[in-house]
Length: 153
Image (cartoon, rainbow, N blue to C red; front, side, top):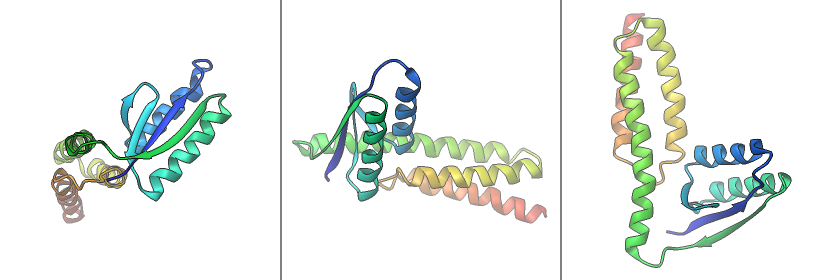
């Protein structure tokens, strides 16, 4: 698998642009490789998103560049994929817990929770490049909660 690497430097002050870039990278599911170096699996969408972020870094007075590459060994490739998958699995686990906790809440709360968790699942799926098995458990838990809300009507 090929990866897109995003190397960037951004001035410390003002801190708002630096924090905004960091948050966007986090939402994309970027994996931190070093200070100012992150990576994502190379897809047209990831490449485009990082190109936009590179423009934002430039507008904030910083520098950014994109690189494409592959790890030198299968072990390194596996390690990168495992790190990405672990983070996604943790996010799915959070959804699963929230769905279970919502079962004890009143109907309006469960209904709002279902809507929120469906949006959350959609965002996580966009970062789930390696099809984590936790995905199906989280989806089933959210749909079971949705079914309870439907039955309660």
